[in-house]
Length: 186
Image (cartoon, rainbow, N blue to C red; front, side, top):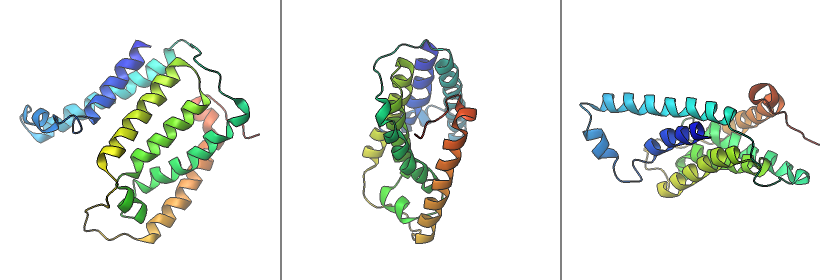
């Protein structure tokens, strides 16, 4: 469990430097912006490795029993999570323009979806930690439209909808092979 906690700290804290008001100070401590970016990337990568290793090696400690009859809520939450994930990685769409960072909202939905389905301590730390991080970053970024000069296109919203839906179907179908836990749709 300590590896998981260490991984979460190494991943999440660097992503919160701006909100903590110390990002520029930390950047100024490095000889160049490139050096900062390199250390940032290595720290976050080490955090991801520790998260995966820590989650897989954590003991199973049940905190609550998820309600099996309501597991469909997780599937419903994952649909917008998949669409928003794609929208966050496409050129300027209306979704991206008005949500500013749809990927953060995607991670929030993803985390809540998995919290709903998993009642163990390691899952609560992993999915709860990511939900709190992404939700707080999304709130801090505000809901005012993007200040980018790039014009939004409804085409990118349509592509996000179609590609995100396809992503949801693929991940749902191969969830067992990818993550070791098959999904039940009945």
